[in-house]
Image (tube, rainbow, N blue to C red):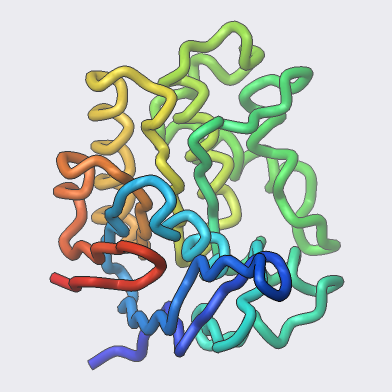
Length: 228
């Protein structure tokens, strides 16, 4: 049995202080193995996006630990967290979050972590390769305003893949798309999971989208209520 690539241990997350404290996550324990495709399914306000953000190191838990690929992100300093996230995870958001003044190619290339070993030519080749992988190579010189919602999300997926992280987090990635386009995006994510053997964690409130995953964690009121 492989070691978990994501290990959430007794995680709690609270917002506010004193009597106004809200518990968003309550004693959450999760193990996800390398290469798994897991959906986190639940209604709005159940804590699923908070869980994803805590797993990705975007938010710190109030208590508990989160290990990503063997690294305890709850112990990493704020200064070092961006580099760890760049190495370990890709993140696809509902709102695309592309930079409007950059082309599709420039949006993807912009997130490559700078280093002496990674020359400009190599960066460009990496960006072009992931755009090809999501069938957006022919649109590489277009700005976000010139792309459809589905095309923008493909670029966002390419941006999440360009550093070749072992984990892909997807937070309602089809929420701003019609059902047909959303289905196409889910097929892209599913193919990436299979071809790259990449661990994928998908947050959704949609039962049909959750079926793309091999395993579903159901959430309610900050807790995992089932795992199958």
